[in-house]
Length: 132
Image 1 (cartoon, rainbow, N blue to C red):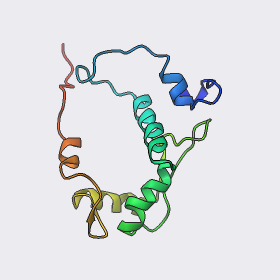
Image 2: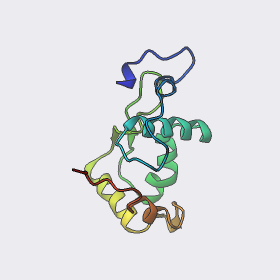
Image 3: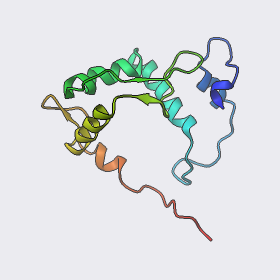
């Protein structure tokens, strides 16, 4: 949906779309799956590091962990990766990525992720159970 949005001139399509939406709830009070936020984080991250996410992934994880083939993301209409989905990699490299995560985020003998990141990323933060 956001990718079909006509972006404001000079603004990434995700940013252009998301900045016009009203906040649904206060942060940390309601869990709702929204790919737009993940896409927005990708735009912000690539802008902060000054490179495409694909290149950053390759530099920090893909090459150091010994993946066979390059990974990439599909690009949105304004050229940023659609980071809420759409990563493309071989099945074997997805399996290797699973091993990277199981091994605590270590690539080429060096930690890539902060010490507690995997534990925090995989723990329950808010109740998502359906209420009658």
